[in-house]
Image (cartoon, rainbow, N blue to C red; front, side, top):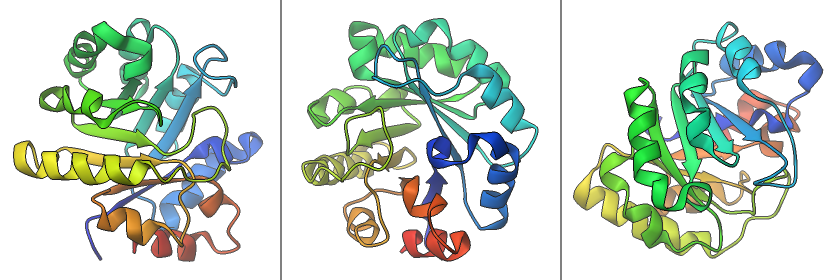
Length: 217
């Protein structure tokens, strides 16, 4: 087994059975739970919030990765950390000049901090914050909805960020999210991604355990 972590996105889960869904992921070999938090403002969709993370924390020992696709995330990071999120990732596009301050706030709350960049944001924006990041998340679709196709321009971002992380801070994780499938996962891992977020590829699979193993490469 390689050191690639599989983080299924519960955006694709059955919300009426979320506790069972998360327990299923743990049994099937997932390494992390990816929780897409959307507010209907920063992205054109609404999902769930702090209570969902709090309740999921009771269902699993796996790390919870709270991906905040919301405006003013600095107002909520402490509550997500207290709810049990192990990682809290925030968008550069939402934080802008407050990105460094927000990442420091996340760490002060006891969670690991990550910065996220959208498909039209240059990789250099994320690179600026590497010293403060436990994880960098590259979006390979425009955030808001699951089931989208991978945007190829993310390849170059992964390659450049992977090289930089290797040179400057090897312990930082490099996460890819959006349109990841069994077919393209090996290439993305080859480009340096070591946290693979997949929603449909896991939850729509007839055999989730087999799907998670295939994504691992």
